[in-house]
Length: 136
Image (cartoon, rainbow, N blue to C red):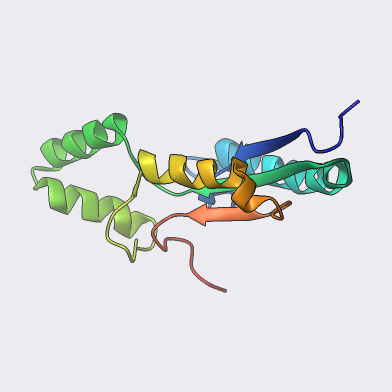
C-alpha cells in the first residue's frame, strides 16, 4: 500500500520510442514505448495517492561512450570529428540545437521533477533532445 504523498517515480524513456530505427534500435525503441505507456497509466493510478509519476525522454547524450563512437566513426571514414558528428545528426533528421544533451542537463531536469517545485506535475513526459523529434 502506498501512503498518501509519499513519493515520485521518474521513468527514463527515449526519443527512440517516437523515432525507431528499424535496422538498429527497434527492440530498444519498443521497450521505451511500452515504458512510456506504463508510466502514463501508473501516473493515473498513483496520483490520487500522492505519488507523482513522470517520464524523461532524452535524445542523444554526450557521454564518454558517445565521444568514443564519434572518434571511431571519424577514424573509420577518414573525416573530422565534426563531420562524423554531423553524420550522426543527419541520420536522425537533424539536431536543431547542434549538439546532444549533456548528462548534467538531464540530471537537472530529473532533479526538478523530483523536487517540490514540480509538485503539480504528474503523468507528463519531458523530451530533452535538442529539437531532434520533429513537431507534428
